[in-house]
Image (cartoon, rainbow, N blue to C red; front, side):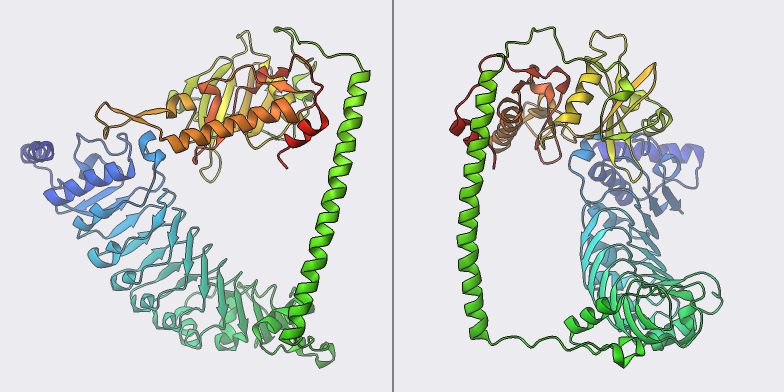
Length: 573
């Protein structure tokens, strides 16, 4: 009813103003609202009360129908970031869609078949850097109008479907920086309109199909400058003779091609790091020999028969190899047990000597509540292996510490979300220098430079160059802290709150205990956290615990003299 009412209002608005680009398809309007919800598009990009064809960013319409959707560079809402997925089923109702661009927008999951079965008018499909996984669906071969397909920089795998050879209108194909395997389909040689092909940085094997000879002769006309075909950094082999002089415009570097190249200069292309004759910057003889031996293929030894080494020794009979394996396993087991006993003896002696030395030294009493480890006179002299950021860098990464990037106000400073290059999220703590705890950041830096554990919040860097601005950079924790994750506001529960399941609660409790146990039993002298609360237990995307608020860590009070066996058994090893 709400959608019908909204649609009626928009129709009246269209009739009043006589707009020509008003969306007049109820199915497409409903599809856009579903897409807005499933992808977590922010209201600043797609405002719900306005005309999608006119006020929604990235939406293109023609004659009242949606023809283009561009969400490249968009950011999800907070709810959308909690569980992102490739949920675009509603696109099936946009039957006249011609372009879909989601490059740089995270869409974890496999490419839906609906692109090939429902969107027959699609001409451009851009899914670069969207975290898509799995194989390419063969249904994409139905997109006979498609002229540009961008799938680079993802986690796609498997072999390429031969159905892609049916895309006769295709002019640009980018499948680079994935994990594709198997041979390059010979059907690609039928793509006579192809002017740009990028298959680099995958695991393709085999030789280049002979059909590529006609493809390169046809497609490279008018492209005398610039590399238009890129097959670099794969495991292709054989002789690239089928490409003739057109190798000048093709990047074949980082493969295992052998033989003579029928031209003198690689031109704008590249033949580096292969096994070719009379071409500089090739792989080593041993590297090439081992590769061709593993494939069971013949290697030409760079055209020099004298370089041929002795053939690899023939494998021993199965019975003999079986006895060798048994003997190696037996001796290995005995050796392992012997080494384990020696290690235990050495460790026990070490702990015994340590305790003896401790008892001979002065007793370590309780550190007063207000005391803290001595601070360095110069904050910039804190020994830390982390990266040093400039203030200008952090200003740009956090949108100049805008309110939109503010996460919360902390005791010692405000926390802002930022993004490194590549969209990697970070948290920047802006130290409040007027706070009573403003020196705590120096204590935390000093502590993290001495102690390291997987249960501590990862410190990525700092900015201490400015006297009036002190900043620390941490890894972003998607599930924030325990205080926010224990109960979540949701529309699916009767009372509006969703509680963490008991398995996750147990996981969090065990993780927090592991971090505290490290401080209590594995640090010398033993340490205590002193600020264990729900807000200091941070949670990553898998609800793994990372302890925060480490500026309050102090030496543990009481007797540190424990038995050798007790201290040894508390070691995680």
